[in-house]
Amino acid sequence: AQSVTQPDIHITVSEGASLELRCNYSYGATPYLFWYVQSPGQGLQLLLKYFSGDTLVQGIKGFEAEFKRSQSSFNLRKPSVHWSDAAEYFCAATTGTASKLTFGTGTRLQVTL
Amino acid sequence: EAGVTQFPSHSVIEKGQTVTLRCDPISGHDNLYWYRRVMGKEIKFLLHFVKESKQDESGMPNNRFLAERTGGTYSTLKVQPAELEDSGVYFCASSQSGRWYSHFGAGTRLSVL
Image (cartoon, rainbow over all chains, first blue to last red; front, side):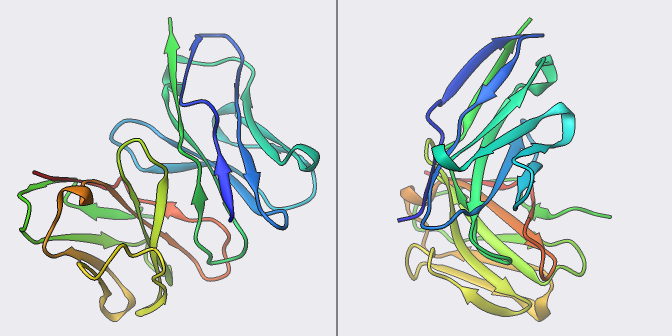
């Protein structure tokens, strides 16, 4: 069955520190991959997406993600975290246009000052 | 451009009652999706409309859930009668035809007591 796994439920980092959120997928073929963020009281906002091509993808708010086919991973990174990055982050995948997304369980990020 | 709008933002009902959730997609988006997140679990797909037609309703939990999309515009999701396990956050998302990514609303938090 197709699945997306986010191994870390909760991560705490200090402001200014680097961040890496893990995401692994299990699909028959390489899916299309996404990272969404949900801040309190807000909807899910698309951070970045990977369809094909360059395996390092740049997104909004200074985030980037690297697709690694050999590891079935799509980890999200940020060099220096800001307090406003505290939110819940979701990795998701789909196999085609206008297809349903399969989500991971989410990683809640806490940022300490 | 207005985003995906969901109403109400929070609903508290008693077991056995009926609740109707509404979603207004971004204007011009043919694809409309409903997802649900039960506490502590991943966001799960419920169903997908293309205009007014149900394209995929494989994620609907049971026949207590009824979704409609009037004239291919807004959509409603009715739960009748509500059970305790229906509690969670219901997300709506929409996308343009041929697009890979969806825009999400802020969600409706449903609490069944």
